[in-house]
Amino acid sequence: MAERLGLWPGDEWWPSRYGPEDELGAANELTPDRLLRALQIPRRGVKYNLALTIGNRLPLQSMHGPIVHYTYRTHEQGADFLQRVPGGNANESGCFTDRAELPLQAGTHIDALNHVSIGDRMYNGFPATQSRQSAGTERLGIDRCPPIVTRGVLLDVAAVQGVVVLDSGYVVTPADLEAASARQGLTEPGPGDAVLLHTGWLKAQFHRGREYLLTEPGIGMAAATWLTDRRVALVGADNFAVEVIPTELPGLPMPVHQHFLVQHGTFLMEHVVVDDLVRDRVFEFLFVAVPLRVAGGSGSAITPVAIA
Image (tube, rainbow, N blue to C red; front, side):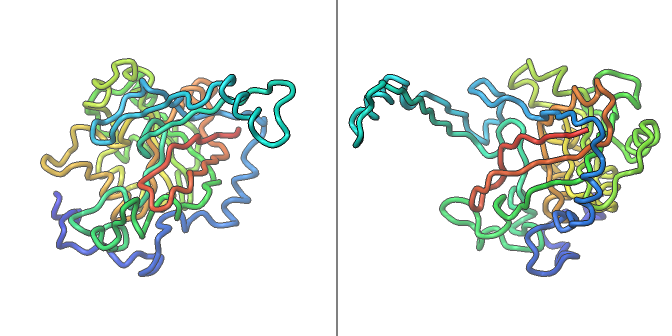
């Protein structure tokens, strides 16, 4: 199967349909016309926060390193500092500051197109080793990703299967995506859309900490192809990797990541909190997400918002 999917270093999936120097990938589908159409979707003016709260206890893959968040200056220390600046601090005003160090794949986050390679090749065939710098990469960093303002679609795959949470290792198929669209009365995902999946995994399993990160239901290769054929801009899910774990292709790590990020330039968003959307049966919405512009970064913590 891997041979047919072109997931080997000798295979060529470039140049991109968007041109040999393109670094935007499927973000090219975020056109002005589609943005203006998306702005017509909200009817009630209700906002939904789709992000986890970032903190020291957030479960993380060990390969990403820890989150470190601490107080840098208390209000009292801030008041003392302000007392020493020109003009003084007659009313003893305080100033609290803190510092945070976190992986760019922490909590609810978006993966940049430089996050994964096949062999030495990233999206559009750019060599990973030639692009690498002391911090980030010269090509395909998250700073290349534009603000994402587009039609958002939530596909409730758990509901299609008649469950609150999909079983561990459940492979989401094209039939699931089609059934969810039909069940919810939606026009199927199309170019430039942000597609979110409800598996139930985040809400049901997040409390398990590191064990939550060992296995999950998620997108299989056929569903990934179904989505890239429709040229969606972004795919997200309420789990830690979007794709099914363990993978369908033993020996190939994260093949769905390789398909989306490397072969097609489709952005991925993980740990997306969709429970309130499910509760209110909001399946189509204005989707807004703006990554931090970290130069050459492999991703960004993000707070996506759905507006209905």
